[in-house]
Amino acid sequence: MALFLFLIIVAIALGITGVAVKGLFFLLIIGIILFLADLVLGGIRMGRRKGTRPAR
Image 1 (cartoon, rainbow, N blue to C red):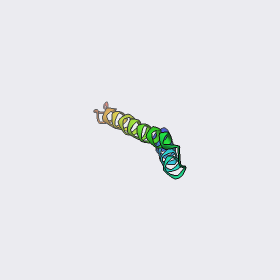
Image 2 (cartoon, rainbow, N blue to C red):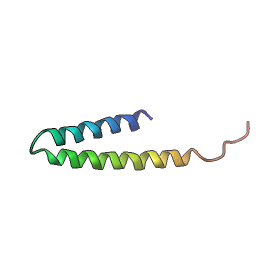
Image 3 (cartoon, rainbow, N blue to C red):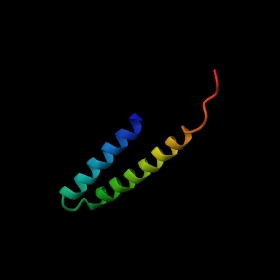
């Protein structure tokens, strides 16, 4: 979960920097790609948790 949140923060920071600084549009693109990859990673992790738990 910490990795997921860290990657979200990095993606947002890269996106803001890419928009704010003229000529660094590639940082916005990298931020968007990182954000989408993070959503996919989070979706895969959430999907694995829905399995049944073994009885004690």
